[in-house]
Image (tube, rainbow, N blue to C red; front, top):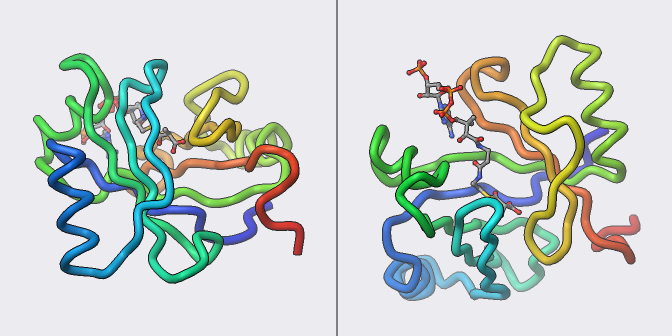
Length: 144
Ligand code: MC0
């Protein structure tokens, strides 16, 4: 099942400009920057409070014009693109959600931030919200 909110993903045109904005205006701290070519993004994890496990904003900038984020920016402009939940077992939670009629975007999990394993529920099945499932890399980020 779902454990907590892992991050809220925000589509941005320029990653460096967005990082500076979130630091200066909201006082968040950039804890990780990564390029994920499979997902077509350059992304930054912004810790909301002192502990990133308390929840992050993930800034997502497109790497290519064909990427999901480029398409989103074109259609909707910058803004919230996804809500991501931490799960213990992405395969098991994906199967559970499939059994409840949700379309998962991938037959099996792919690689996300920092070596996590991820899958997504189609936004049309989840009330217009792109839902991401995140299984943190071992050792689990959250062993509570
Ligand atoms: C599209 N739609 C959305 C949406 N994207 N609704 C809410 N939130 C979004 N993010 C809506 C459109 O407005 C449209 O609605 C309908 O869904 C289109 O569906 P589609 O034609 O099936 O699909 P596409 O081509 O628009 O693509 C949407 C889809 C895609 C979610 C399938 O973005 C995708 O594969 N996303 C998963 C990967 C991803 O987002 N990667 C970037 C983050 P109407 O009503 O007009 O029909 S990477 C990441 O997050 C990693 C690094 C990590 O966290 O570790």
